Amino acid sequence: MRLDVLNSGYGPGTKLLFAMIRLFSGHPVPDAARIVFYRPDFYGNHAKAFTHAAMRGPSTWSVADRELTAAYVANLNGSAFCIAAHTATARQAYQNGPMVAAALADLESAPIAEPLRATLRMLGKLLVEGVVDAADMRAVLAAGASREQVEDALAVCAAFDTTARLADAFGFEVLAPEGFEAGAKYLLRRGYK
Image (cartoon, rainbow, N blue to C red; front, side, top):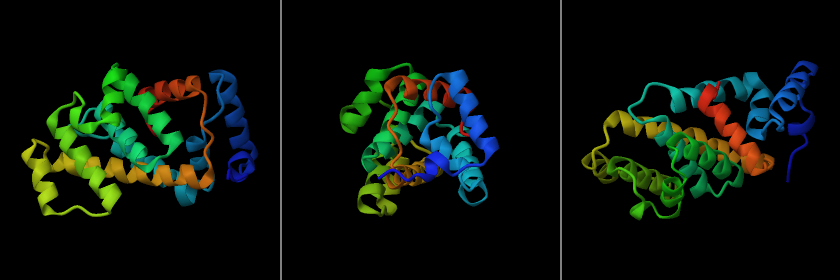
C-alpha cells in the first residue's frame, strides 16, 4: 500500500524542486529520492550521507562492484523498486548487462571475481539467516577480499537492506525502464548526495 506522504508530505520549496526535476529530466522523481526529503532531519540527511559514503566513498571495491552488491541485496530482499534501480545502475557501471544478470540469477556460476563472489555469498547468508560467523569471514578473506572490503560491503548491505525495507513499507512506485535508466545515469554522475 503506497503511503500518501510520498506524494504530499513536502513544503513548497521541495515541491518546486520535484517539479523542476520532472521538467528537466522528463521523469518523475523516484520515491527513493522523495523519501529523503520527507523529514530530512530525522532520516533523509543521515541516509544520504551514509549511503553516499558506502557507495562512493574510498574503497577498493569499484563503483560497479558496489552497485552490484546493492542489486544483490535488493534481489535477496525481493524489493522490486530496488532490484530495478540498482540492476540498471550496475549494468551501466560495468557496461555489461549479461554479467550483472548472471550474478543476480546464479552467483556461483556468474563471471565475477572470486573475492566479490565470496563477499556476496557471505552477505546472502547474513540477509537470509540473520547471522554470519568467524568461519564465514575466514572464507571471504581466504577468497582474497580484504578486511576493509568486508567492512565496505557490510556498509552497502546495511544501506540497501534499509532502503529495500522502506521501499516495500512505503510502496515505492516501480518506474518504467527508462526512468530507472535515467536514475542510473544520475547516480553514476552525482552519487547519493
